[in-house]
Image 1 (cartoon, one colour):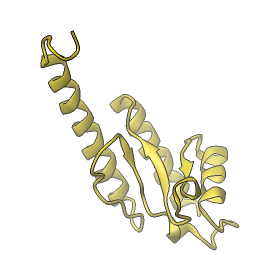
Image 2 (tube, one colour; image 1 turned 60 degrees about the vertical axis):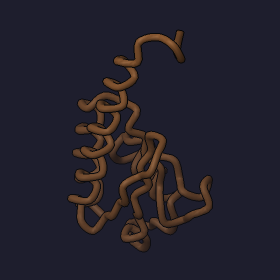
Image 3 (cartoon, rainbow, N blue to C red; image 1 turned 45 degrees about the vertical axis):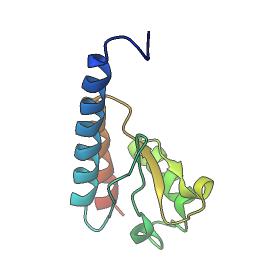
Image 4 (cartoon, one colour; image 1 turned 180 degrees about the vertical axis):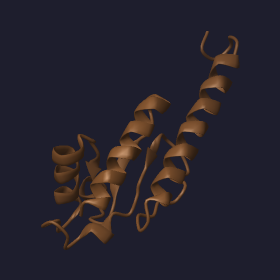
Length: 113
């Protein structure tokens, strides 16, 4: 049924994930000096967080991820798991409301560094 049935729900979900992706990328790029390229697939963003290195004892994405969770209650995956120390992985497979809360918390966290 997933292959031969009505594909309208798939199209709606694709559109919704694109909307979430666009909002997250736009929001991250507004948090200057963070930078995030548009992802080519999946439902993850990989912002470059290296601007935080040297601030508040942050040396790499592991430190950044731990501090973000502790101070802002936002969970991300350190880039070391994907071969980079300069990035973290953020999922946008959540509600728009949660994305907005996360972006606001990240903004406050970055302002406090």
